[in-house]
Image (cartoon, rainbow, N blue to C red; front, side, top):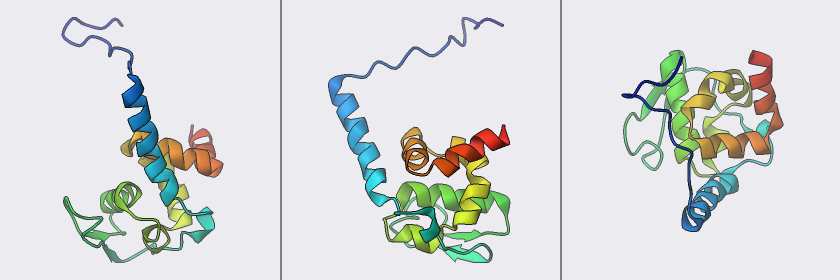
Length: 130
């Protein structure tokens, strides 16, 4: 099926040197926040989780882990907005591994690549789910 004139295929991304540098800095921001190991992630697997303002600045502050959409929203928010010390408190290794195949397309490309580069077991979850 070919692209219609109303919906042309996206043009290849053409980044200038400044854009590439900005992207590298953006990814480094996420890389510095990573735990040494996924074993450090011992956050809750059930109940209601309340996020502090520095993470929940733009929306929900309370997430019920028993509700799949809220659980996914919590993990997406924490992956994007947390500080390094927040990750072990709010993320759980087993739950992250379980959610990753669905969560992966919901997080930004930089977050996704930084986490999968650091923790190959996340990328292997994608292959196992395929």
